[in-house]
Image 1 (cartoon, rainbow, N blue to C red):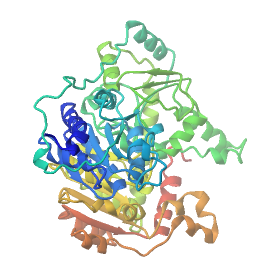
Image 2: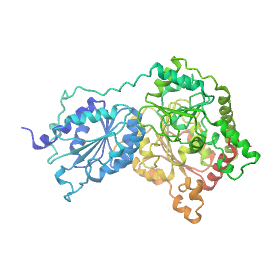
Image 3: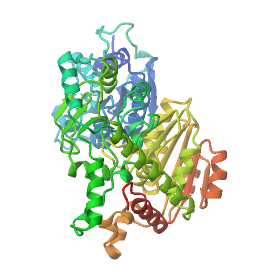
Image 4: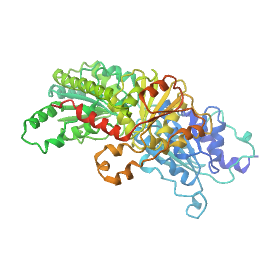
Length: 574
């Protein structure tokens, strides 16, 4: 006769079986009592690898990294109460990056909500605005789980929440009593929905549009690595602009320095109207403006590019892609709901012609060459700074490796430097651009992909904020290299004009400190090196395979180098 505990939790073990059937191969679980059946079930299931992480916020980001790197749905489990709320930053990031997570939050039965019972809050729709769907799963609703798994995996993918009320008792007398069925009640597996085929009328419309304009730009936002897409774009005779997080660095002649190429000093034009310099700058600025802008991917890092395209709007703007569509330039005129790879493949098959591109391509190509040369010249003669340091780290990265970029300055520095190395994949939490969880996300990637070297470049505050990403209840990945840019505070606030102009109150933004990561490395039994010169950095990088490398630079020097890069490398500077 089955125990009451097994009767209460039978549906949970069926849910775990169903997850395995739908392609779940990994689960991240956080310890707790109310979630005990989920921990036991995932821990025992032979087809699912389970990672235990104590800190829920870190666990959420590790789960995000596992799902991004594997391309498969990953389960995230916690107990009842505020534990679920600690998943929110990672769930939100997954929503904006379209990453398939299945969040399973254990809950008290509904009659105990608002009864002063321990670890009991309103969990039912806790992520409602940042998930594809939110469901309550109980003994009678296995079909709800199927719907949730389907929803997480259909294009565009994203996180889905199952809240699971669990009644006591829920601990089995023995884990040997927990058995998984050889067959589940569902025979369904997820299939990616086939995208709509674009008909002849669409392609004729595109050809007509191309025939009517002289300047066409393709702009790639943040995208996952896609060699097929890179190969297609290499065959299209149109200028392609891309940030470092677009994973288009292997596209020939890509315009990679948009922050410098499209910085037009519009603010100076307001105070110098009628001068000869103003006229020249205005002409050059107009020369950079596309008539037709074709975008794909998600967010764009380059602030100057966004400001430029908002001021100098294209006549038409088409966005290609499945799922959420943003309009960061406030110029969108058409949305095409197909994958970029399909769109550009059809473009080539149908021999879509681009009649008037040569001059515009030359203008942008020459601008890129100019800023490349001037940037290198500035960095070569500058005192040791984090721009030069990041350039060195990126240049000596192993091929076929993965680069993770922290938010605030690291991702911006890398975007200034650019990436020329082949076979390097780039990831960054640019869905919401927060500093929370950057280390944890890289840990998840490294765990999912143990055969490649993973390098994260992260700021000091972001690292210290996410130190619990190193706190794993299993072996730390030995293929992860952590590079910390330590300038003694939040250096970005010493660079951007608002906070840096607030006198003594600037410290409220920069939060100066004297902390280092040496003791943190010791606590988590990781190797540690600290460097303060280019010579020390070059020496340490030679044998750097795993652990923490902390690069110390001066915030004021970094600001001076930034100012030189942004004022002396403009593509149209007189």
